[in-house]
Image (cartoon, rainbow, N blue to C red; front, side, top):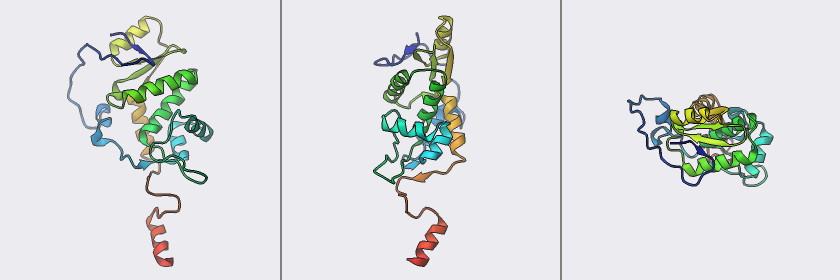
Length: 199
């Protein structure tokens, strides 16, 4: 099946059978299942999201205000509120950063992000985004990648499963918080003791 140029209305399913092999715990495909997904109320503040995605806070703020990547755990709610970005938000931020670094226009990136959102997160580990520097293509099998390269169109590729692993590894070392923890709420044991002692 030929690769899909983004955006395209429905993504056709590959008619070629995929190689079946046993899945081991910790492999990419299992990371995208609901069994190991991060809790939906677990989020990361802006500076943490920036560190994990390799972007500046100015980029993060602009992309949130323009709707490219909005925080899914807790949006900004006025002055002084903290946005909380979910794992998938940070994954998209990192993909956007990689696409920008390769010279893809923000307009093409918006189309690719919209397409990936509509596609959902199922089987993202099997998706490779390829580009010729102008257009972005979705490839879901090694044959599609080879077809694209043989046609002289592909210049670079981003394997989303690999990006997922990088983001997961980075976030494991960075602080997260639950959506219910508003600024000023008791966040740790020491703060809890202070509240009991003074309250």
